[in-house]
Image: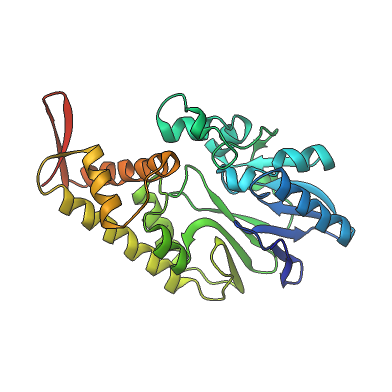
Length: 292
């Protein structure tokens, strides 16, 4: 873990729970794509940089989930590097309590205010294509999170952030986090059609051909949607939908899983309703969902 792996020429990644991309800008300066999950991850990244004699000039956050920005604060304090994040993600990076608050739907209880859902604050600026270093291309990858992006380097290496999961991860967690299901499916379709010398997803092995894995992730989305429609064959409230999905996929309920899977299921419900495949009714003080 935390091994530096060269993909091609100036493009690298650091093996970690969520892969950290690294691109050499010149002989001494480098940029990172994300920073790891916490201060300890940031420290390990700093040790790699020091060993290689490299200077960190900028961190480009693909999105604002805590496991991708947790090393920001430490690395920024240690190196004085700039940090950029796209769109709404920038606001979440600057105010990390927004992540657990968004997931919970209100002020998050103590059980959600921890490093896995709430990173330490760092100073980020809004990311645009014009603000990128030479040799980098910004790739819009919305769906998993609000304004998530990936990057293509001059070496034709594409860093895909969290827009897909490995087969092993899908089998273990079943219902991966999605904010916007329609946008996510559109992103997967675009990824299926991409070509590059190498693809580096954050939660799957690097590969030269990403299309099969993108299709697998797409199939899982449609499987979950079909399962929700089956549950909603009779009018049912959200909590019962969630309970039946946890039972169907043999998932363990705790506070973190409740908000992560729960937020995702709400996104599925909204998507299915917008498509006209679900309808709602208010009955006896409850919002009930019913397949059309």
